[in-house]
Amino acid sequence: MYNKPIGIFDSGLGGLTCVKEVIKLLPNEDIIYFGDTSRVPYGTRSKDTIIKYVRQDIKFLQTFDVKMIIVACGTASTVLPEIIGDYDVEISGVVVPASDEAVKLTKNKKIGVLGTIGTINSGKYSEIINSLDDKIEVISQACPLFVPLVENGHLTGELPALAAKEYLQPLIDVNIDTVILGCTHYPLLTNIIQSALGNDVTLVDAGKAAANNAKKYLAELGLQNDADNMGKVRYFVSDDAGGFSKRGGMFLEREITDDVEQINIEEF
Image (cartoon, rainbow, N blue to C red; front, side, top):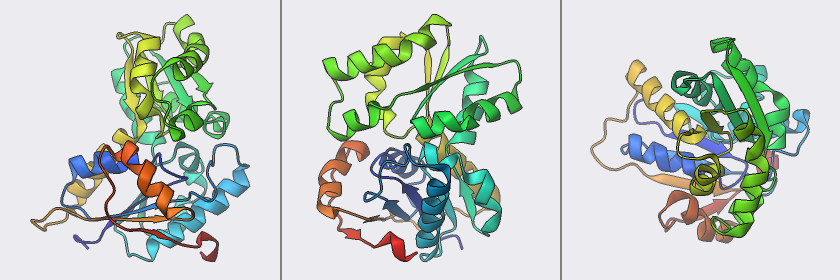
């Protein structure tokens, strides 16, 4: 059980920012990563479609007998309450850990949430945050241009700066002091977002919060990998393995030299 891998999935490349944090925190753990690149993005899909995709992603990762699954996708995480009871493996998303961290960090009880249209429309962040502290005001903002900007390598310059200014003004207007980056693509725009908000605003990286939560869970149950060697990462995608290798290094902040395997997720 201890040496079983951790499964992590996302709709595409963004979940690699969570993989990066898991590697930092749990360097001995083996990881199975699945990016559903043939069906990205999840954020514009219907709820029923997202549930279908998430179930298939979980089923695929279960073929590796993983000891836990991290759903490194904000949109996919919003549907977990409706399906999580159907599985006997620990499944954790990004919404609850990020919400918990933001509630602990806010001083003026005003939290901003940035996410895809699907994540924001679900209302899950507001629901979780207010279940922890009903006096907190949550200001949610969909940022549909952020993912394509990141996917196309526009991490600096005028384009992301203009988008950030447009999206973040409503949060600035109400004096939020803490902002959740509710999509695992968004950490790549940290400098742009921080610059627009100002240095007095604290950013919460949802993927990093999920990685911290995984470390805590494994420690509490004594499930950490006891091997002395560095863990290995296996990468799987549902489309364009070559493109994933080339662009994935941007999210991991290191080159992907291992083979990336393409699978047919519709079989699961």
